[in-house]
Amino acid sequence: MSLNEKANMISSYSGGALRGTANIPGDKSISHRALIFGSLAFGKTKISGLLNSFDVTSTMDALRSLGVRISHDKNNDWNVDGVGVGGFTAPENIIDCGNSGTSVRLLMGAISTCNISVTFTGDASLRSRPMNRVIEPLREFGACAYGKDGNSLPLTIVGAKNPIPAVYRSPFASAQVKSAVLLAGLNTAGETVFTESVMTRDHTERMLSKFGAVISTERTRTGWKTVLCGYPDLKPQNIHIPCDPSSAAFIICSALIVEKSDVLVPNINLNPTRNGIFDTLIEMGANLTFENMREEGGEPVADIRSKFSPNLIGVDVPEDRAPSMIDEYPILSCVAAFADGKTKFFGVKELRVKESDRIASMVEGLRSCGVSVEETIDTMTIFGKGHGSVRGGAICKSYLDHRIAMSFLCLGLASKNKITIDDARPIDTSFPIFENLMSKLGANIKRESI
Ligand code: S3P
Image (cartoon, rainbow, N blue to C red; front, side, top):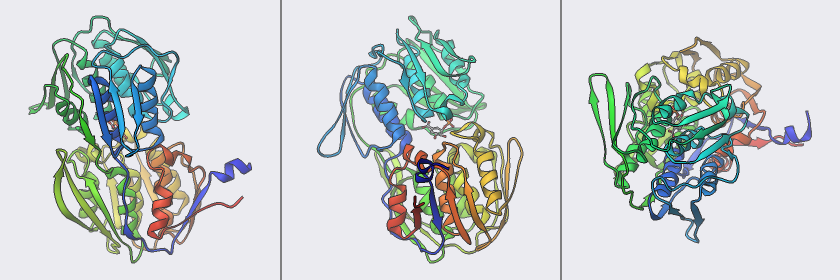
């Protein structure tokens, strides 16, 4: 192993109770959207609480190369000088979206109805992820796409000159697909219609409506149907980004499994399309309380208190809950290892096309830590043996996947032996202050010495 490789390793150890208040950074999904919709409104949008992470920087850099001016001010707010719907200009170079699926898929949608061509690429993880789920609906608007092997990055989108509105029913439960279609619909005359069988996160719909678009969602016999009127005159906004429930989940779940922990995580967005993890943890017997419930910027928000919960039980997590907790399965599988009995995730095949194949990554790492796990294409089962049962003592691979890296570090906080992550760099894509925040709460997380 080279010194460089060793420098990227981090280990977590049991022992330190987590106590105190954890201020979580801004929501990643909402941060991407605030930048993109701010770019599509004429004039200056101000954003506070924007997540400062590699994924969000990928969106920001991409928008700059499409002709948008974005600057940072002394109050730590971001100002976006929007170019209006259809106002993007052709970039000088290929756009590299790094690790960020949300950046590339949403921007492909926005480009697909502009009269420009853009080539996107990304890191090894992003280049291995399927893009046909977005390309197919964008072709209905009249866009063309030329990807490596048809379906992967590097990929060139040639925007439609005279876009036609699409009426699309998505075979995937994916907010990225929905958002790409709605973004394409903005620069298209007429009504774009998108239907999904289970409702995925609705930040795009909420934010478009705030910017002044005419957009509505109704439940029909066959699913959730969203209708967007094209060519809206989007008006710049002041946007405050709430804290990210997906990042908060790592702290909340760690407190549940580490003895004597008691952590307060303020201002967490409890949007019903994102809060499946909390419903599941409560079913498992987690000691969670939701304090100071309120509404902020049209989103339900609460301060969440999480305390050590020694009597967790295994549960079935139904398929229709998957979209509302899709990013939380890796950390939930760690909590399930400390529950009594079997926890089974149903209908989770989407996890196989995330930053890594998250079922395979978790199964491999959990097994190496002594946890008994089973997988099928579409399910994952963890055979929990209760508090204090996890052996640990392994090096787990993060596979360029931030949520895998953080999940195993959390697991190590309650395992009998330390757990080491081979490469902690992916954590910076969504939660760069994770290590620091956890250490301040009392977690025993250390860089490997070189
Ligand atoms: C996201 C949607 C989800 C999620 C991702 C962020 C978004 O992906 O996993 O981290 O911001 O729209 P899918 O739409 O592919 O489920």
